[in-house]
Amino acid sequence: MLFDNFTLILLGVVATATLLPAQGQGAVFFDWLTTAAIALLFFMHGAKLSRQAIVAGATHWRLHLLVFGCTFVMFPVIGVLLKPVLLPLLGEQLYMGVLFLCVLPGTVQSAIAFTSLAGGNVPAAVCSASASSILGIVLTPLLVAALLNMQADQAVSPLDSILSISAQLLLPFITGHLLRPLIGGFVDRNRAWLSKIDQGSILLVVYTALSASVVEGLWHTVSISKLAILTLVCCVLLALVLWLTAVLGRRFGFNREDRITIIFGGSKKSMATGVPMAKVLFSGAMLGPALLPLMIFHQIQLMVCAVLAQKYARQGEPEFNPEQTPAP
Image (cartoon, rainbow, N blue to C red; front, side, top):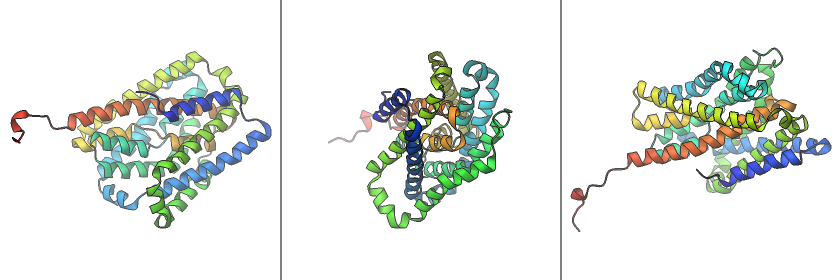
């Protein structure tokens, strides 16, 4: 339940962007640097993706359909249905951020890690998490356009969004994956320190995005009370989705290992994908409110799912019976 180092650094980045936001030529420099960091981030994601793992889990199509349905259908529907409650509580900008959170793809690394720890179907988790990340490059802009275009002043062109995301995210991803036969061994051997590139890219995007929003008056419109309400909303949203994924897994007759995969795959939202997408899809004053729900939800999901995975792991351990212990 303790905050990890990345979370503490992230809080430091938020404080730095609040006190020392990038402005003028500094903002231009960080914008270019962020674009390069995002391209490198998705290049590394592509290089890490193992085709063997995808093939191993690809045949479990019923599980994948349910995970995709939770990620790209159930989550957005919940966000829309909660509008009468959330809009008065959070205001329009933060509610748009919650909607953006709801249409993001799932995580890759943490979904697989928690599934493995809990004793779930790891090959299927690798397949569904990787496919969710790739599909999200197309589906997320379409869903953002569909949901935000409900607001007259938030018109978004889905074609422009897809083209922008394809150029900035999908092209580096495909390039990295095509080069995996050449660099895959190096990437697999050095995953520990290469993960620092992922984290560094996220931190850089958060600083650049929050700087732009702070300059536009982010903290004049988002009060401490609204942050507290937003945190509570994220807790309720996660609890609701965890319950629904567990119920759906049982209702469709999946075994224990598959249900674990569905819970951890269908309840997560990716910060590694969501932060770069927010930079592409939003601008100016909307960037900060778009990121705040994701940043809060991401930390809550990590803490809750860590505890939940350990609980599943204990339930899966065989009980100790002294009478069955062989004599020395």
